[in-house]
Length: 403
Image (cartoon, rainbow, N blue to C red; front, side, top):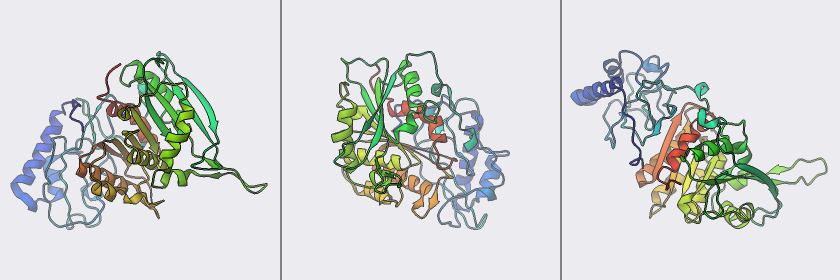
């Protein structure tokens, strides 16, 4: 997944902390307690953490057992302790694949809240940078206006759908300044497009695209931002009804058919778009995230890249089945998937968002999908996803031919 990424060498203190913790486990095996690991490996706050407090404040969902065992590891990286605080990508950092966790469970040390270790993170810079809290998710330079060529954005209304009859929606089309009609451009489709296209929002697609395309960190890419449909009111004083949950949270190919057969032909008319599915991506937040995944899952011959922020892989309209479906579907679909969520995301009658996203990541790993998963400490918002959005795009397009 991340073999093409060159990770930045961690700090000496970080390596020493991991080594001492690992030695403690290997020398004493299952009798080592979580408290002892902490005390032996970290005299102060652990590497990559902030405001950890006592071990009793740590948490891990699920059941506990009395013994502690080192789990097999696929790659070597920094051991990171967390307490509702998860590694935030350093500005200018590089995405890494899953870390090498020491997953401990216990019942005797802290009965109510067992230890939790991070399973994915971004590579930190050579400087020791603490993990950032939700209020520290700030937009970087790539999300700010710079002296680079600016693309154009046009908006329109689509109201002739047969897949979702009686719906009306707005959509936006971003065309970069570097677009050459003689060369096929890549394509990215954003569900809940208005939020992504806002110049003062959390993602600022036109600004980020302008900056990254100018730096050749992103191929020349046309972005289509699509809003969910609304259905007119049937009563004189009624209000239009949103069709978002039906379109986005439902499984099946209806949204993919709407996109490929109805909206994209109109939105991209006159534009030269690549037919290579590896050059086409779908993106969304929350229900828009599961919508993006569903489109690629149903139509991998048309879209093979997915960005999912705070994805609603819960039982709103059956999306909770995806982890099991991924595990049981062969052959593996040729998809590249980026998942992001926060440890303080929703937990309601539909399900638990952090657990659902971790389940998705585990299933993708089990089946060998090209994917990465970033778990922060934000709630159900775009703050974390927006802060890392430029680096997410770099990871997604890392091996696409340079312009």
